Length: 343
Image (cartoon, rainbow, N blue to C red):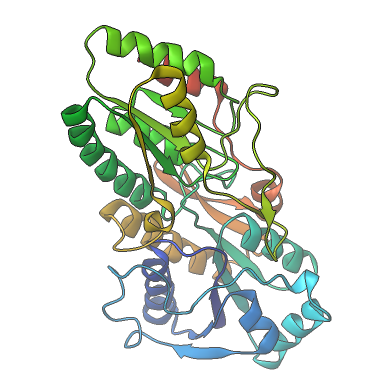
C-alpha cells in the first residue's frame, strides 16, 4: 500500500511517537511506502509532502511537536479545497490516509471519508475531548506539566498565606483542570461544564483560611465562565478560524477573589507550555498503540473509522460517532471529585 500521514490542529506531545509507529508498522510488517503531508490538511490540498521512512523517524519518539508541522486549515472552507485534496490522493496513488488530530482534524476526516477518501483517524488533543475514546494523545503530558506547576505553587502559597490561581487550557471542557486539580491537591477547580459563583467560592476560601489553612490553590480552565448575572466579562476576540481567543479568566478570578476575601491572590497562566516538550511514557505508549492500530485498520479497509482506547483495548469506532459532539465531563464526576474538598 501507499499511505499518506498528516498531523492537524494544535500540536501536542506524542505526535511524533504516533508518526514513528505508523511508519515502523507499515514498513516492517507490510512493506508499505509512506509520505507525510506538511501542515495538516493544507499539505494535502497543496500536495506538499515528504517521504517517510524508518531512517527519517529515528530519534523522534521523545520529541514534542510534530516533524510534519500542523495547521488548522480546513479544505471545506477553502476554494476548491476538497477537490484539490482528493486530486492529490489520487495523483499520488495513495491507498489510505492516516489523519492524526483532534476535533477539527477528525471532523474534516469524517467529511473526507464521506466524499470517498480512504481515511483512518487517530485522536490527539491535550483537551481529551474527542468522543468514543477514553484518552487522547497529549492529555497525560498536559496534566503532568500542570501538576508539576501546581506542586510548585503550593510551596510559595504556603510561604505567603496566598491564594494562587492557576489557569490551564480547556476551551470547552475541563479535563485538564479537573485531573490536574485533583492530582495537585487544589481546593477549587473551575471548569467550562459548570458555571461558577465567585461569591460562594470566596466564602469557601475565607472559611478555609479562618480555620488556619495557609494556602489555597484554584485551578481554572480557560473556558470557564461565571453564572449568568454574577460577573461581567468582556467579549472574546474571534480568530481567523472563528474560534474565541480565550485566556485571561484566571486574572479576573484572582482579582475578584482578592477583593472579596481580602487575601493576597496571584495568578499563573500555563497556556501553551502544556502543549510543548517531551511526552510522558503514557503518551508515548498510547501514541504507539494508536499508530500501529491505524495501519492495521487501513490494511483491513476500515476507512471512515478512528482508533480509540476503550478500557485496556484499542478498538475501531466510526468517525461519525467520534466527531458528533465533544466529550465533556460527567456532572457526577465533577460533583464526586470536588465535593470532598469543601471543608
